[in-house]
Length: 100
Image 1 (tube, rainbow, N blue to C red):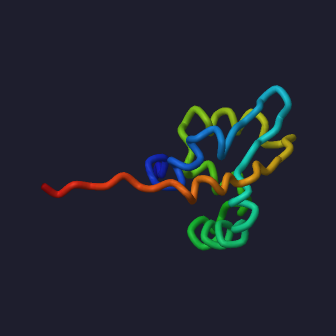
Image 2: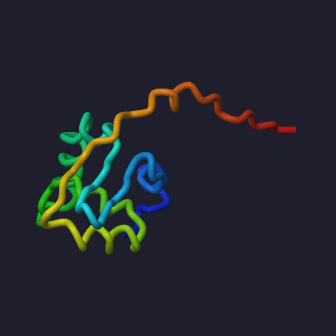
């Protein structure tokens, strides 16, 4: 099942939330995944009990096939670096929907 079009898929599709640097073998990931890591991994363990529950396996569910391939290139020797959350995102006003 490809979850790339889900809310999480859309979130990690944005470079400000998830980025892979293949040359430096660094994965940059939004701090939200650090804050809620236990929640994400608990869900993953419950739904994929035969797989190793880690953030990379969880994220692979939501990434485009191209990003999954990039991830496979570096997954053994990588550094995970968390990107500070941009709190300004919470200040955005959603567009108004007109029902006329």
